[in-house]
Image (cartoon, rainbow, N blue to C red; front, side, top):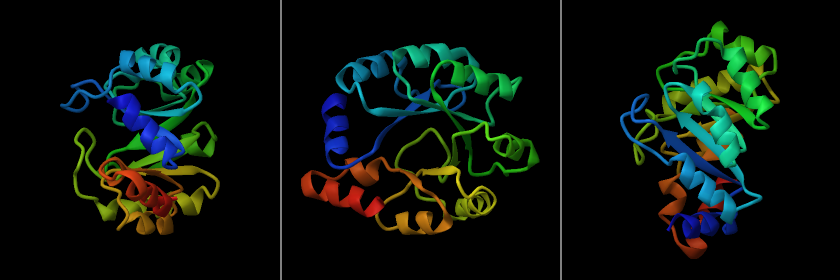
Length: 202
């Protein structure tokens, strides 16, 4: 029961609800669809929905995601994007925050940093697994990107997502990440153990 599980982790101390949206094309799996987000929004009217869009054509879904209740739309630089600034502008026009994500093998070069330099991005997501599959092992070598970003952008929200658990979250935080995503590292625990896992991560 998605409503029950979502409320359970929020009541255990989670600040946001991270929602994976997959199209079966950018990544081979299908994730949570827009009607499910819409249904969940009705049950959680004030929760921040951090929507991680692993989709080929993010421009196509901006208005729909806003309408169903998305709070932040994070899209991948590897997606099929003609004009990045137009996409960013459209997300903001639709009253959502803007997140930019990179896969583990993608380097953060000047073509990406120019959007950070212009302060167009609210949050930067560094993937610490290949997107599209849950339960993968944490790729610690990706944290060098977090270190680099934190050094250059001290006030930027930097998120890590993928294989983050109690035993490696400290490494993420020390690298400079201040937004932590965890799936199995939280949802696999019940009761006080879930609260403890979230408390450690915070």
